[in-house]
Amino acid sequence: MNKTAIYPGTFDPITNGHIDLIQRTLKIFDRVIIAVAPSREKQPLFTIQERLELIRKSVRRLKGTSAERFNSLLVNYARSRKSIAIIRGLRAVSDFEYELQMALMNRRLSSKIETVFMMPSEEYTFLTSTMIKEVASFGGPVKGLVPDAVEKALKEKFRKRP
Image (cartoon, rainbow, N blue to C red; front, side):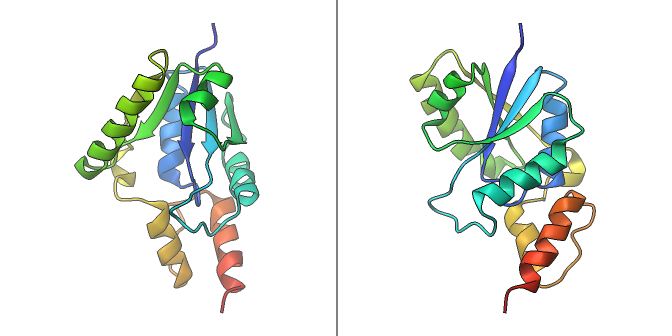
């Protein structure tokens, strides 16, 4: 039986912290679908198509991964992909309250899909996509914090901005 997990997020952009969680998730699950969501609150730097492309380039060597767009209730999407779990990253205690509320709502909507909380490796506990974009927007170095394809895309994106 293949065990599939969904790792949802906006991934604007994907970071090495995300990659770390994906690699560790693959030790538990046979398949990880990186599910890219549009964001109503955030104003993404990259389009959904650009984010999917960057994710695919970043995980192409990780067997058992795929990246897809979703635009529905997460548990419905997970059910449609025959997923048994939703992966959520917790960097700090401040993440926990929101993530717990979401996990409990998801459990209420579908008791067959578990939420699995994972913590990133120590070297990535401070890392957020927002922070990466802020540093890159001022020409700061993000090497080692994001995959090479993302570093290149950030440079290109900010080169075009005034």
